Length: 278
Image 1 (tube, rainbow, N blue to C red):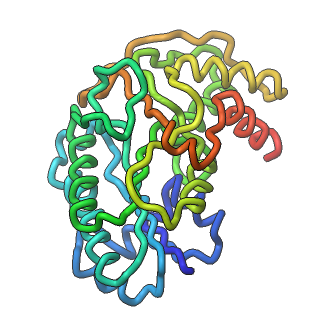
Image 2: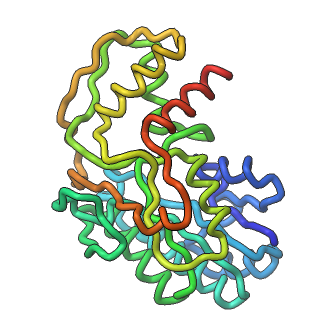
């Protein structure tokens, strides 16, 4: 078995590389997934048996302007990888998002719920799902949400923890509800399910707002003895150019038949304790 990690410099990709030091990692500079010929050549010569596609155009607001680029990466990228993997007999895992839903539901979305993305980011990711499954029905697609943890690049929790340690007062969005996903848990899951196929939802914790998540993180950081300067969290309603689902929590009942999903308190404790040890 030889694993290829497409998009190895991002948060998930770098975590996977740490978890699987023998994996073959490739960056955008080394492999442009929007170039089908380049993808086919790379897959043919890589010697890989499994591919994990961590690439995405994920700037939700900019996608509304850079529509063609968003679709090139999020729709054409997985299609090209699926076509190459199918031709050369490789397994393929593709990561997708909770933004394929419109947020009108008020209970967690299941894999069988109808997709109705609001913005270009969600629409392009949904198009990528559909194209991939048409080209390679044996692919594995994992939808996830609010990814956080250690690794390259900033994420919501790393920025939040940094601000808790440096700023006395913080405004935190309380308008969206989803589920935060600890990147290490997701990476370990991908290794566990590397030979599976179909569509699964995975997220750690329970449905929560960023504000409520910040409250939990603040309390845990204080109890762990971190030098917290923040004493006030202020909830506010986030507004942005691109539409976002107000509620996009993913139901994980299907995947919980295969693996345990940790609670919000557990993953926050793990994350904070790791910071204490750094």
